[in-house]
Length: 523
Image (tube, rainbow, N blue to C red):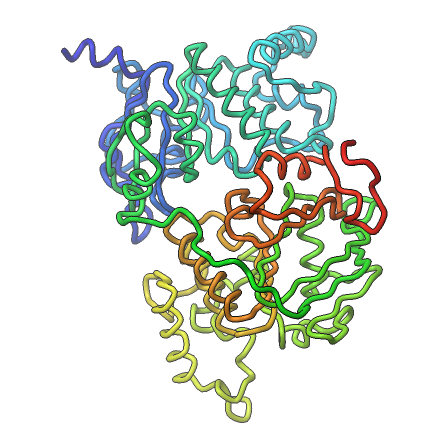
């Protein structure tokens, strides 16, 4: 019996425990990967998925447990050991060198040399064969800085295949891709599994797991919940296992009742820091009270700079912005803050002061109000009471409540703290950039409900999101940005994810979006 059992599994992680100060990230977890299967690893933020994969890749050493390959115990001290065992990993943030070509990135660290000279011709031939075999079309001589994110991911996959890895780990691989690229990636994963590769796929996107995985292992709060065949389950059951309670996967909302204009943006232009072209070019739109207006697009098409320009983090080079009828194009940040809340994209850089406590972060933009200060002295009791109220209302979890240092909290709870603070400020306009980035289904459900409630109270919500499910289910109107311009205005009730993807990739654009620019609907 034992003999047969060993042959079934190419990798077994048995009773793995990994601790960090004050927390068991992995608490007695067992994961078994069959040869030739696609095995998903699902869990909330901080459930321990990435930690477990980092143990397998040799980045961390577990306190307890063992790893076996083909039934034989192995010791993985570092990523080189992992590579020698045929284990490869595509990280969430790609590990590529921008100024090197695609080919150089693929062979880096595994170069074929003869008398100290690089044998590039042989390498090029091998990469060409691999890319044709698996349908991974790339331009070997392009520099990485000039290719799309989807292409960069292909380079990462080819890096693994070039090293003849047979166990492939994908850590949240679809976070930065368009719908078309996600479909292509799923196809690539299927063809790799057909060739006998074994794949571990970390995700908290239920659609993808249902579409591509054979089996799924669920972790919750560092513990093992169970492993199930995806053919025998559904999204609702998976989300219950992951969160521990039933979750509403669809946003519940009534039709919008847009009122007067809150934010009016005309011919707005923001220069780029990276190249000569403008990051935002001649953009015009209006956000009204009582609606959620979403700006969709692939990362890096000017959404970030647009928000920086509107919130005062960057100076525009042209155009005007009116908020509640007042021109704020060149207003100071505190001036804008009187009518604008901002949930920023980068929660560490622009959302929190990481070395301040949670309660200090909660009053960052209001400490000067009479409620919180008297002749320049902060009223500690008022701040504490206010913070306690928000922490309870938004279920912000932390080790020491209001006096927890923000830096020590998990990303999901940092995000909840920012959302709580910004929504409570009760402003006419809420600019929400990636408000649920990296959050799990339970936290997403809560934040979506809050944004819809704000809309129904007559606020204007400007949502910037890369998550297409979120764009489609939360927004009342969608504007698509491509290369710094608005190329389409869509009604989520009447469009499809596929059509949205075509606009995002620049393959399609409407006539009238940029006042008479962009003639012709297909490039």
